[in-house]
Image (cartoon, rainbow over the protein chains, first blue to last red):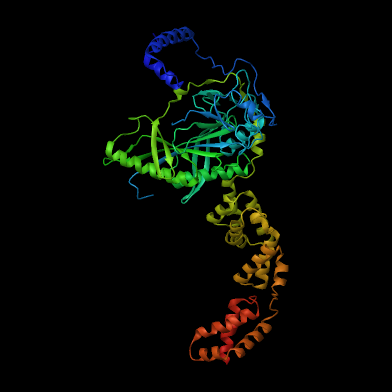
Length: 95
Length: 491
């Protein structure tokens, strides 16, 4: 396997996911399969090939600095699991 | 700082919010102080299926700032996703720039106690800001509150080389950025409101007995909310590292880079956690934005709009007007409008040094006590100040009388001539007239004359004072002195 359980544990931590040991083993296997699959690209010789920044051959797409009407507060907060007045409420963040 | 047993090495990461009307990728208003969550839309709160579109004005302000910081402008630039999970970041990634920032390799000249110094800039890039969190200050475990008005507003990140070696230099660097970007109307740079934010990378070099030095691990100090806290935090952190080095001997590279928060109330830095490595952010190219190419014409058009920058201004004020480095710095730090004011006064009265003294000694004091309202320092038109300086010379007015006239002009909105008339000051027409006044003063002060005769030369001051009073301060003090002494000898 190309990934270790520790690497997956770290990635899960970065994504703020709490995994059981059983899930960790399963995901290590599945993620390794994905990484190996994509890893086939490594076999292509890319010497002298410029990295692709964007698949579309266009650039300089801008909009003017003109305001639009924002969402009403009620609409913006409609999907919020919790709110305090006009604020979203989230579990206390200690970090 | 020379007596510290180590050398401080400081690099700053500065964030400034850009003065656009709208956010970086959507048309929501970019304004401080709106009611919470009243300036958001599906783009900036990260709804699925939306597409960001770059604000042209934001990109041009970014170009302006980078050119003022003497940076190279990349002909080709792109944006990347920086992935991390935090409640103030609704998309779970920040659109930022990773390997191809739009500008790099610049420098900023700052004014230090030992003369001008160049701080090199590694890069300047354009990214979106996150929302704002309100935490439960009492620590009662209540929910944290999230306001996404700031999410998606344009933010410039300016990363310096570790070229600063004292807390004062770090402050000067920050002040120079603020002065310049305010004058260019790129940002209002209010640290209190968070439109100018600063993180400091600090470590120290401790000389070793056998020559050379040991470098301590770098700590990134965050939560620096004022110019004063930048200075204090760096000074504290350097000393903390020195004491830790004495205890542990740990050097750069032996422990991971850490972050520390500055606690303003306690006046200490609190080391927090292992710093996430760049790879932890899993950067990858932002597929929703196309790259930007900047050609020579565009770049040069922006460069031509910069005007005279503070470092150039300081130099010119010294060369063209013969001002000291100190005076040139005081005027420049007040902004372009003040420099223009000075040049008008100086040009009209023909005495740059006097113009500068009046501005730095009186005008700025008025601005300080009256605040920026009522025209601030410009409550007195430059032409009127120039006239006052000219009258002061022509009429031989004393400093005290001239300052009284100044206060009258500012207070009542008068011209120099009107103020002179209001105070009833008439120039002493001739030396004969002055001589007559001196003689009258001697005749009117027999006691002072008698004292003088007894050898109390100081008694002449009373006569002199009477003459100055009579002439309302318009007589030249040294001439009065001479006439009084001459006449007293004759009595």
